[in-house]
Image (cartoon, rainbow, N blue to C red; front, side):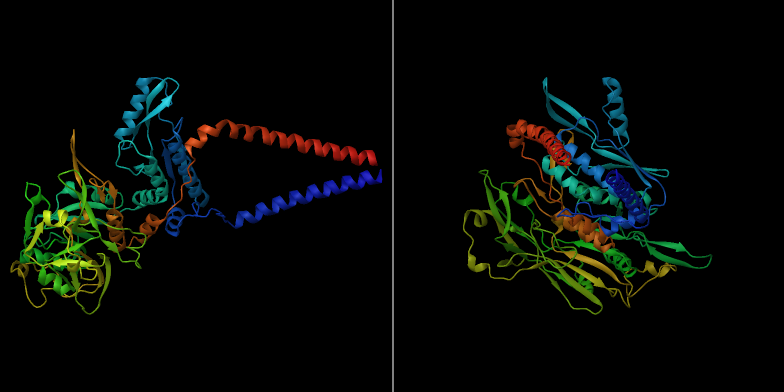
Length: 575
C-alpha cells in the first residue's frame, strides 16, 4: 500500500511539474518572440526590409488569395508557399489577415463564369491550364492571383511571374522564389501615399514605347511611370513650388529619367533643361548609341552596311560630367548568335556579351547581358564624383573606328583574323555618383531663361547619380507579331537563340539603387532551391510509398503496444 501511495505521489508530482513548465514557458514566450529557421536556404527567414515593412503596418491588411481547390501539383506548391509566406507575416504582425478562396467552387457553369468575369475585371490574372481527368484531356481555369485590401485601397497581385499564356514549371518555381519580393512591393505600393516617378524622354528618336514595354510594365509595379517630351520647354522636368506668397522654389517633377537610344541631335535648350534637372538633384540613365549601325539595314538583302558617327550634340555635356562615349564599334568573339539565311545560328561579333563587374550591389548575382553594336566608353577624372564600372566586354576585343563597315559575309562565313582581336576588355557601362558641375556655368544656353525670374539656375548639383551605357539596346525588348497585334517579349529574352539574359534584372537593380530602394535588390537576389519530386519515380513507386506510409506507422504502434504489454506483464508477474 505504501509503495502504491509513493508511486501515486510521484505521478502527481511529475504531472504538476510538467504543467508548471508548460505554463511558465508560455508566460515567458509571451514576452519574448523568436523563430528558428533550420532550412539550408533560409526560406522562412524574412529579410530586414520585409520585416520592417510588415511590423510597421498600423492597420489591417486583408489578403484574398484565389488559389484554392483541386489544383495541379505545381500550383498547389505555389499555393502552399503563399500560405507559408502569409503565415510568416502574421507571426510578426496580427494586422495581416488572409483568406484562400476557390473561384471555381460554384457547380453552375454560368455562375462560375460570372465570378471569373468579375475577378478579371478587377485586374486578377488567370490561366487556362490543360489537365488530365478521368474523362480524358480537359481545361481548368486557375486564378493564381491575390487581392490586398488596406483601408480604402485595393491592389491586385499576380502570384506568377511569366509572360506565357501557360506558365511552365520553371515559371512557377521562379514565382515561388519571388513571392517575398512581390508581396513587399505590393505592401509598399499599398501603404505609400506618394510613389517615386520615372519618366522616359521622347522627341529625339528614343526607343518607342512598345520596345520598352516590358521594362515599363515591371517598373509600374513599384513606381509611377510617365513620358516627357522636352521640346525646349523650360519647366518640362522642373516645377515651381510656392513656399509662401513671396517665395517659390524649383523642384524636379521626376525622380529619375531614362534617355533610351536617341537618334537625333539635342539642341542647346533641351541640353540646358537636362543639365538643370541634374543640378537640382535629378538622376539620369543614359543609353547612347554613338554609331548608326543597325541590323535593319542588313534585313533588305544587303550583306554590308556602314556605321557612321551619330551627331547627338551631347559630347560637351558628357565631358563635363566625366564621361566620353566613342563612335567606334566594339567586336568580341564572346558574342550573341544570330540566325543566317540557311537557318543556322552563327556567332555575331558585333553583339558582344556584356559582363557585370562584380563587387557592387547592382552587379552582384548578375550574369551576362546581351548587346547590339556597342561603343567603347572612357571616364574622365573630375572632383567630387566617384565612378564605378558596371559593365565590360570580355577580353580580346577588336575596335573598328567610324565610319565602320559591317560585313556579314566577312564576319560569318569567313574566319575572323585573331590577330585583330588584341584590345583589352572595353567599358560599356559606368555609374557616376557625386556633385556635378553645370555644363552651362557662367553662360546661358537659352535667352528665355532670363525672363524666368523664378527659375533657380544652379552651377553645382547636390549629391546625385547618373549611369552611362554605350548601348541603347540594353533596355530594348524584342517584339513579335500575334493575331491580336504586336506583343513585347520579356526584356533580355532572345527569340532567335531562345536564351534569357540578365538585362532586365540588371536594369531594375540599377534603377532601384539610384532611387535608394536597395531592399528590392537584396530580395531580387534571394534564391530558394525548389526541391521537386520526380514524376516518373512517383508513377512507378506510388503504391510502394503508400504502403510504407500506412503499414509501417501502424505496425510500429502495434509493436510498441506489444512491447509495453510484455514489459508490464513481466514486471507485475515478477512482483
